[in-house]
Image 1 (spheres, one colour):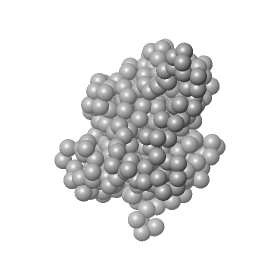
Image 2 (cartoon, helix red, strand yellow; image 1 turned 120 degrees about the vertical axis):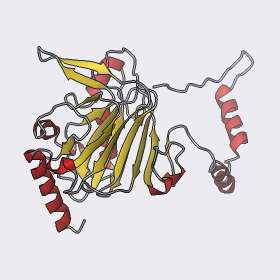
Image 3 (cartoon, one colour; image 1 turned 180 degrees about the horizontal axis):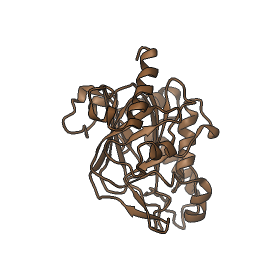
Length: 303
């Protein structure tokens, strides 16, 4: 993560650098009256930042291949050390892209109708008898329902063991964990995102992450495997209405001394949930039961 720095030069004849800097800003932006402040603010309307949501989503410059831009309901580039959140309808396709090879998409899912139901990482590993995330891997709630499923994966480097970073962890490793500082923690950013939906610290379960791999060694140790390189992607389908929280922060096992994380692209578009005719619906007895639970829940609510 890079931090922009600015400095005000001052020489021996500059007796009031603060006053001079303030004057130059005021003269440049002409905000010394309500009308001028309004005009100045409106003049910034055409400017675009490097990290931003694209509104409307169809205006994204990074629309995924084969997707009609008009179908997009979410398009955003999440800054290194940034976060985002969105409520998505059942059947929505969700795609994460790692353009530089340094993104790390930490993910939490909640039932958008009843947020007490949320991602259960232990069941996500246990029910499919597979601890490593990949294509066709279900993301399950603690209520035995499929919240989402991985439908595409060009990375193969993910983690469902370590969760995300905490303030204490980042303060020890980087010396700072402030949400708007140089090295925010994933937990801190999740808390900010959750608060926007009426959720608190006690509502945040362990998360999983995409694009920075972890494997379990023969002795039980967790080994960081890093990324698969630039331009990897992961696609999901929402099997129920979802509240999605994403924190794009350095992985807790990343051995590099600096806070290394790259931009993350997020896109979502309208689609259909997994149906009984699709192979993964009945791929295993456990998954079949989880899908039946999901369909029963959604159809009872007219979804």
